[in-house]
Image (cartoon, rainbow, N blue to C red):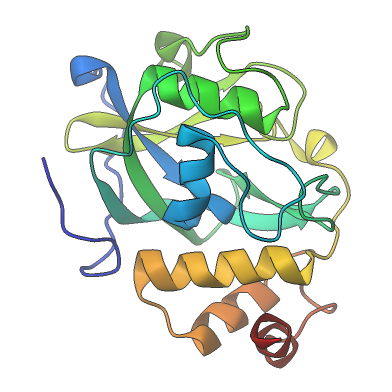
Length: 230
């Protein structure tokens, strides 16, 4: 399985979950919708390092191998900016799979263990620390709250090429926190990620981000483009 570079083809929509689906070789698709749209940023979770503009370094996964493949995705649901990021400042992208609309994402073919270690780092824990990711618990109801953190609920967004598509988000609006405007340095990463994953021109990506709850009314597309160019 070796799709072409993300952004080089039409984005794919995951199929509905089939109860009998199980990961082959322990692999799943991790669906990114925020800063991990940018492959280099995801690489800091996998192999360790500090993303440009961030104030935190990451230890990396127990298995630091890069994704076996990646594809552009369209996920059923919507993103808003909420809470405050200790890494970027300002609001963070949080995905609501029950909201109307579609969200541009990026699917990375990873192991279940890598996704668990990525989730641990999102919550400022060491890779390999509990609670671990129980895939069966995610697939049965489609959602597995592993804790109260903003990225501590695993959601199955569907099936792609016979494998589950998993993402990480908050258990609900109360967990995500109040809407909050994202910082310029965070928007810069998202803009680059949308260009890399989907081939979106900067103007289209800026317009999309400016319209999301939390950014709407606080950022315009022109202001995002200006901030990201500086």
